[in-house]
Image (cartoon, rainbow, N blue to C red; front, side, top):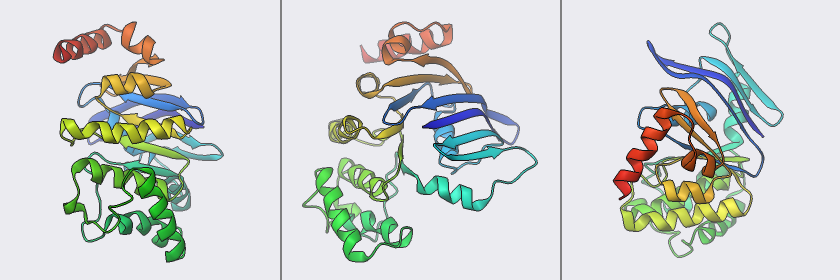
Length: 250
């Protein structure tokens, strides 16, 4: 289970996260929506410790990290949390000098110290899972954006994380390539993978989420099922945001 308690994050004088509280049960999918600059990506990056919270508690099952302005979290705990989470970025972040299979093998070999033969077998298995069994020898520049993102998902899964974190996984894709990535994420959700997804794809969010939160200005405005958040928002700012989205879709 994921727990986030009273998490704050500053960038200089800018208070980006203002006491965020969240819980995600094992095997569930949390989708985070909200306008640009609302703190969605910062929250995701804080949980993976790509950004360190200035205050608050992060918990993943039996692992707890507490942040205060005057204390330092031991590096062994930071590494332990990172090793139990997988991150998929909007810009893919593949190693350009490695093949698709090489990208999926890399974390297994360097972080988990798996034998290369075992890492290769696992890599082929995961590329097949995301529909890229025939692309193992291709380099990132030889793949479409959708294919690169599916390699990135396979790479994140390769280290067998307890949680997958997605930061706008389709925002850099041409519209016709979005569906192939969302199909893989839906498959993972159906298999019971715990996931936290930041997305602007509202139809996908409503379909895949067990729980949804809407953020703005570093706080959670709405929280509940997709039906509750999208159809029956109680916060005026949330209603304005959703009405604007509806207008754009029309």
